[in-house]
Image (cartoon, rainbow, N blue to C red; front, top):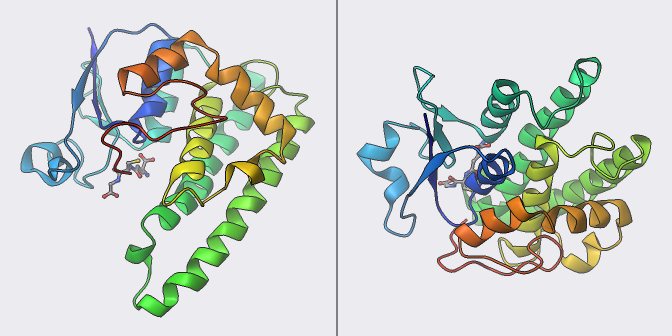
Length: 230
Ligand SMILES: N[C@@H](CCC(=O)N[C@@H](CS)C(=O)NCC(=O)O)C(=O)O
């Protein structure tokens, strides 16, 4: 039976969509109109009470899934794909959790900074600290690719972490105002760039982005999609 993916162009659903496409899994994509408050609608909140994308409905599960990393792990386990062999399970878990609770979480704090401060004057110092953290994360990830002898985050094979990381690095170049991680700064990490170049050439990645209205070098020279709203 087919999955259902709730999405808005270039939102975190794109990570899940890349994996669905990569595994050639059947799914229906239902657009949530972010500009018209679709994520706050009663209908959508029944799927994710946080009002966040993505949501994946797996007919074999008793509840809808949310949280990008949880969905990725569920798909990787259900289909025994896009993950390293069992002896490297810890590698998958630690980096998937890092991407979710550190890199993605810090990017969210940059994208939605005003939600994280009590006063306007706290905004600038918060953003400065987050910029520094994102830079540190890139250095850490670059070193990890080297340590695993790449070209991917966990080693020679692409996996769910790579799609998540690539989308994060794409968003970081575009949002909130193209300055979370300027492209020129990202270019200083050759292993990350090589990974992004390899991923953006995969047919499944190109198809996933095309379905959400984006094309070209989606990771190394990204452009805003039509109807962008992070
Ligand atoms: N922790 C969540 C974060 C998802 C997230 O940030 N989704 C964004 C779209 S990229 C969203 O729905 N933003 C709307 C909002 O925060 O109000 C996950 O990993 O799925």
